[in-house]
Every structure is written in structure tokens, then in C-alpha cells.
Length: 339
Length: 201
Image (tube, rainbow over the protein chains, first blue to last red):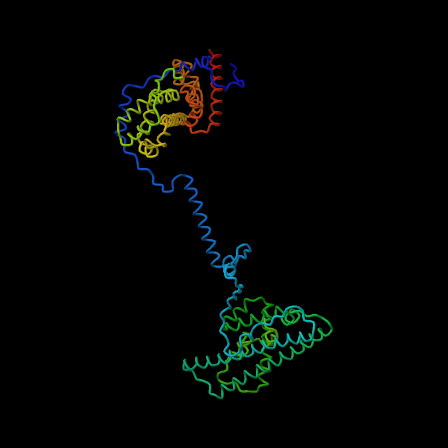
């Protein structure tokens, strides 16, 4: 017999030396009384626990049940996501939205749901359609198209003027009501009429300035169109707004106006020197324009006129009258091309 | 080949199912009958696996007690007089239990002692005494005991108990291919140990 040959694993042949050697491995018999000891141990053994209750049966059934539960759970989640419109938000092309599924069932056209408009108190009088922003699609290369664009812009602008007027009236009335409720002296009808007249004059003056600038700008645009140049929306709208720093400055002035004088001084102190100088300069220009307008109006200041207009120069962005709060006189974009 | 064991009592599957049914209703006579029928072969396996008389008896006793405990479940799955009952092979079930118990105890002993159970000579007097005792028990026993426990089980089941490979594989919870590979390695190891032993003598 080879020690490490390929035949080492073959069955052991009876009668071979290895078989004879293995047969010498004798086994003793069981000890006497073995069965009695086992029986005694069985009697003393506690009764076995009841079998575990497994309703699902074998391993295969348990696995299948888990798979089924997973599939049902995934389906429920997918259904809930589709029902809540989550799939539309992720814009998954392979998963149709509930509207599409319903339309395919009923055979009707899908109607796109309008986006929820922000809650804005609607103006009382002007039509909402007039307030819609003007959208200029494509290029404008004929005077007729440009005129149509101007007409639509003017419609929106007129609507905004009306809305602004309504807001001013509402503010005046609410202020009078507040003073009446607080027991403060109320303006006489003559004083109220003077205030309204002053506001109207300021608005007329401001609109006149804006209209002049608009006229110049429109003539320039018309000239470009007549020269064969095609205008885009940016050509009409953006030049009026390209001064981003001016817009930012205007917004900052408006924020400063809403602060108390102390907060305003502190905010100005925290600004960089250059920005502070720009703001003060802008405020001085506006104040000069306002004073020029007041001198032209030549009307006495009523008792209800806000006294902040005579604020010291240390606090440049003085609050203006309600008329000037509602719009920015120096910003032509507010009147010419609505956003 | 059962050179020194008792001849196994022939028992049909129907007898096994009826016996289990009686044990399920807690009939001690049924357990005694099962011991008389199966304890001999089980003891041979346990003895040749462990080489310890007391350990072998403990293993057989534990196997019979497990049969006593599992009798209600076995009876419910293999009712007497049915095709399921006809498929019950109590001897195979018990041999699987005994083989697994023996392998578990051998592994536990190796874990506790921290060294191989077979003859491994070292310098301690106790080990010398053990080797001398093993030599007294015979070179054959040393041959079998030198095998790893699973290879030893394969030799015991197929050579001594003359089980077909399929049944021996079932007793060891193995598939037939893996068992045949294990058996091949066991025979090779046995032959190599036998040659080494002959050279030493």
C-alpha cells in the first residue's frame, strides 16, 4: 500500500492489512442498567416546550411572505407618492401622474393645474388681468410690434398707477381711523384735501418725469427698429434696470426708512464707508428733488403731514409720504416696464 | 462490518412510526423498546468516535432522551399508518443525532484543552501517561483517533456501520459529493497513518 499515492482514497478492501487492523477496534458492550438509567432520566426530564407556532409553515413560505410584504409596501409607498404629486415634483418621465392616468381612463385632455398664486390683497378696482406682467416673446423688428409692446406696457403701467392710488387712499383712511381710535386730533376736511392734492401733485410730477424719460427711450427704440434692428425683451426692459447698484441702493434705502432713527444710525455706522457715502448721496439727491417739488407745489404743510421729512442729515433715508412709499420716483423701471 | 457490536435489531418503518406514536403518548415501554432496538449501534458509533466508554454512554443516553422529547413532533409529522409514517427511519435519525453529539463533544474537548485530542506527544508526564494508555488500548484505536472528527465519523459510519454513502451523508448533514470527498480524504489519512505506524513498529 502506497503511503501517498492516488489510490489512498479507494475503499478499504476487507481482508487487507488495514481492514484487519481496523477490525481490531473492539467495542465494549453497554453497561448494565443502561436502559433503566435512560428511563429514569426520561421520567425526571421536564416535559418539552410546546412547538413554536408558525402560521406560515416552512422557510419557503416565510421568505415568500416577506417578499410579498415588501412588494405590497413598496406599492403602497409608490401609490401614496403618486397620489400626493411627489412624482411630478421629481419629473419622472416613466411614471405617469394621476392626472395623466385619469385622463387616459376617461379619454379627456389633461388640464394643467395653475400654480397657486401668492396671497396678495387684490386691489379693489383695477382688473387683475391688467396687472399681469407684459411678456414679449421673440424679437420685435417692426414698428407695429414695438407699438403693441408699448401699448401693453402702458396697460400694465396704468393698472399699477391705479393700484398705487388705491393703496394710498387706503393708507390715508386707515391712518385717520387710527388717530380717531387713539383720540388724536384729526385733520379737518380742508387739511385732508390739501394732503391729497399734494400727493396727487407729487405723483403727477413724478409720472411726468418718468413719462419724459420713457418717451426719449421709446423714440430711441423706435429709431433702432426703423433702422432694421430686431429688439428683444432685454433690449426694452434691461436698459432701464441695468444699474443693479442703483436697485440695490433703492432697496437699502427702503429698508432704512422702515427703521427707527436710532436703528438707522446704527445701520449706517456698520456699513462700509464707501457704501455709506453712496447712500447719503442718493438720499440727498432725492431730498433735493422732493424739496424742489414741494417748492413748486407751494402748499402749506398740514398737521397730518408726517414730520419725518425734516429729519436731520445724519439719518438720510427719511420716510416719505405714502405716495412716495408706494413707488420709487427715481426708478423708471417701476413705471415703464413691470417685472 | 460490526466486529464487536451487537447486531442491530431489524425494524421496519411501520414499526418505527408506531414506536414513536407510543412514545408521543409517553409510554415508557416504547422508550425501553427503542433503547433495546437502537442503543447498540448508537453506542458503537459513539465509542468509536470518542474512544471513551462513559462519554459514549452519555451520548447515547442524550440521543435517546432527545428522541423521547421529540417524539410528539415526530409522531405528528409521521403518523403511523400513513405514507409519511412509512418514510420515518428512526435509526437514521438517531445516528445523525449521535454523530452530531459526538462531533460537538470532540470539538468542545479540543476547545477546552486547547490542543488536538489525538496523540500528540509533549513533555508533560500526564501526556506520556495518556499516550501509554492509548498504546495499551491498541494501535487500531490510535489509527482512528488520529483522524479529524468528521473524517473519523465518515470512517465509522461507512466502514464499521456499513452505511451506504447516501445514508452516511444524511447522518452527517452533508450532500453526497461533499461526503464522498470527505471520505476519500479520511481513507487517505487512515492509510498514511497506518503506514507510518507500521514504519514506527
